[in-house]
Length: 447
Image 1 (tube, rainbow, N blue to C red):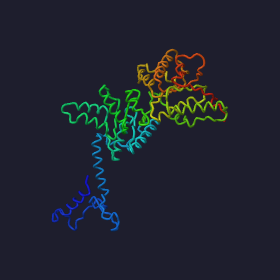
Image 2 (tube, rainbow, N blue to C red):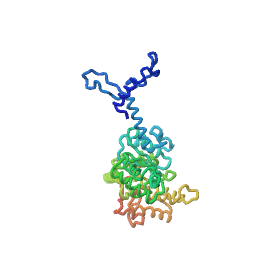
Image 3 (cartoon, rainbow, N blue to C red):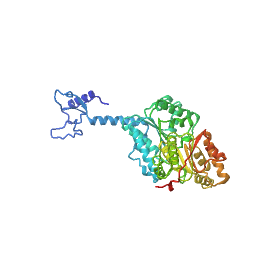
Image 4 (cartoon, rainbow, N blue to C red):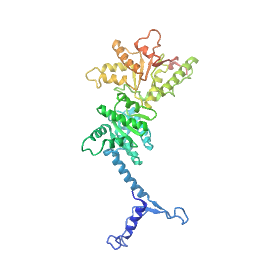
């Protein structure tokens, strides 16, 4: 970087060198000047009165500042490890590369949040989505934008990072283990792509835990791209990634397993919100209004802090699905892995997974559902499947009950009389809460 003294020396040198040289322009030769402000000197003085405080003060020209910034950016790019990913930016990230409207909405939201993050990187930003959903593009765009803003950033693919760390133990290694490890641990902004995609050995898992734990404790800005569901990650790493308020999780694709199963349709998310849930409609008596108001307050609390099970019981049309969808939508916005399913459809899909031409195996589907961050089972009890269906639901719910995983159930069941193995778990006060809604069917309420 040129200091003002170096600029002056350069000026003096240009003035005195070769006055009689053939390179000196003649009086008829036109000299091209690129910068009108400083005449290509790189500096100028303000035209102010002699008694003005800025009189005689040298000012570095914008053209020189831009040159210095370009040099700084070049150094930051070399340091960043971006390589060919320097071409990825926010302008070229198009949410419409997907034809699915729900996915487009998620991608657009992810782009906006990622761009906002680059203004002043704080905390952790976790990009969650399958391969091909745009995580690498968005991660690189964050790095490139931060570099343009003059910030130091390192981008690295997690499998490559582990390979680089292992390679330092070779006799002819160009860098020491501590050099690479400390640089990654302490860089002002770290971007880790493809976390969880590589085969994990105890050694590599330990190194990754150390890096993330250090950055977590120091609250260093970190961007992490993950292709797997969070439930499949190491529990220690998962706890760091999901820690609020440091970490914000952004999904780039709905968490479906095929045929829309697992997702909350966008039209339902738009219509069924906590704000649109009415507790004061004409035709409701005092008891019904109080019941709906309680259901809404409980839902708001659960939507903010999902813990254990929440079961909505009541007749058709009282708002059970509305509240379940509204809670799920809010948790999706918070970055949670939400799986929504109409129980009869879910069981049909599980049966179909046994067929030879099924795209996803039964084991994959079942594992995905039982470990979902938030599971919403709509209309439990309306399924028709005999012993097989009951056994699968039992296995699913026993697992979530034992781990107290956030689960929302809607059912027509009033929980009176003898409780079977499934109903007894939903009614277990140590794990959750059954909220019975007393109200008329909204389709038959007087207007």
